[in-house]
Image (cartoon, rainbow, N blue to C red; front, side, top):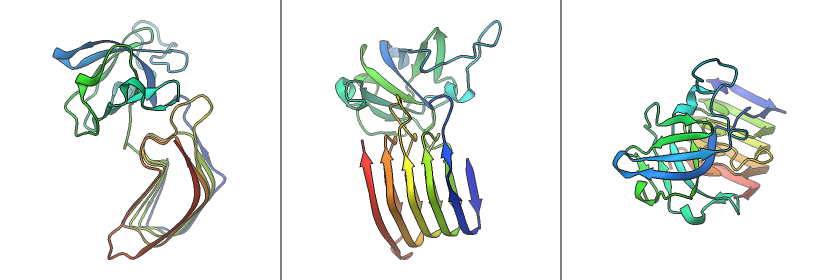
Length: 242
């Protein structure tokens, strides 16, 4: 949503990011079809609208990205977190094709589980009728804040309620400070960002995270992937929530 390339002394203050409709869909499995690796998925159309009600005739998808099912996660509706009867299901279909999520009726969709790049848990065979699943339509598509080859970066009083990928991403950057950086669930939603809350790739200098919150992100809270030749120091004073 905001991208900085080859910048020095970047400061972002007092920003809040959200999406009018969650970038994922929570629902229940009605039936499965093993031969085609599809399952019938029923959702609350008020909380997770699928089509554009203002269109006449055949109703198109509310947003084009709803046609993709890039990841499927077993969900415990009682605890509002991954787990429950479908706890073995954690499927990343990063190469999911268009129409892998197809609307077939009011609040009803067919979801196609193609061959996945990465399956952390069980595959399609573990999907059963009655389970609650969370379908992420985007996982690593784009990020909330992206820093490419930047230095002296300060992020302060920034809140992310939603992002189609990771929240804050820094690549080949150095000397980064996150203060009062909050990745949080919007009221009534199960997830915040669809992937990492904060991700650092090949960064140098110092990374300081203070008085920050990581809650409900779809992947890592903080992921620091740096070469030992870069020489990065990390300090973190924050809270995490599942």
